[in-house]
Each structure stands twice: as structure tokens, then as C-alpha cells.
Length: 148
Image 1: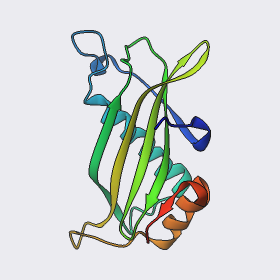
Image 2 (image 1 turned 45 degrees about the horizontal axis):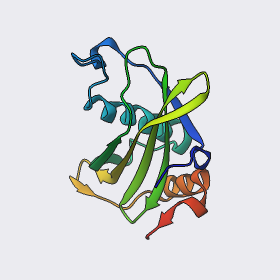
Image 3 (image 1 turned 60 degrees about the vertical axis):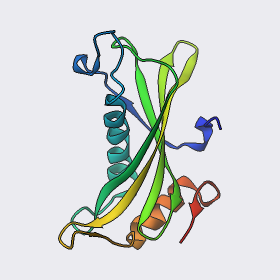
């Protein structure tokens, strides 16, 4: 299923570093997870205002669909949104785009399963209510599968 960029509100520019490039001149496939992480952290800080002193987040699963290669000369950005909210876990979708003279071109998509986590107890915990509501309100209830 093709992602519709109009379903996304949060977007952040991603810098491509020289160290991201492999010997063939492309962004190394493992680096895409870092790009997704940059976007997620920005989303959690700027939009959701996640209270890290109360509850942490760990990553439970990652999926990446590589569609087109990137080079050090490309200008890119990453869209991110919450697509499912459960009791203690939630799924996020990422869309990496290349900025071209003709607009944005989707080059990679990815999905991550994030888990609300209590580091002191070393276990998953329910998603805090304020953060849950901010995710739903920001990313719109019609676009989020709420399994809780």
C-alpha cells in the first residue's frame, strides 16, 4: 500500500553525513534506522511532549522497505506518525522522502513498534494517558487503529 504524504503532519529534515555513505556511494541500509529514530525523537519531543522522567520508550520491532537509493548529494526529510495504539505498545510509520525540483519523492518507508517502558522496573507499562491523547489528537483518530 502506497503511503499518502497528506496523512502526515510531522516532518523533519534529515542531514546525510559523509559517514552514512557506503563504498558504492549510497546511504548504507543500516543508517535508515537512525534517520527514522531522528524523526521519532523529534515527534516525541516537539509534538507529544513525552515525559521521559516518568516513562521511557524502547523499540520492539523495525521494518524497512527500501524503494530507491540515496547519495550524499540528496536532500531528504522524514515524515512520521502514530498508526496504532495499544495498551503498552504503539506503531509508528516513517516515510523518507528526497526533495527534488519536482517535489518530494518517496524513497523508503518503515514501521516501528514502540513500547512504553519503565526502566526502573525493567518492564513494559501502559502508555501514559496524556501522551496517548496527544498522539491521537495530533495524528487524528480516523488515521489511528486504537486497539486498547
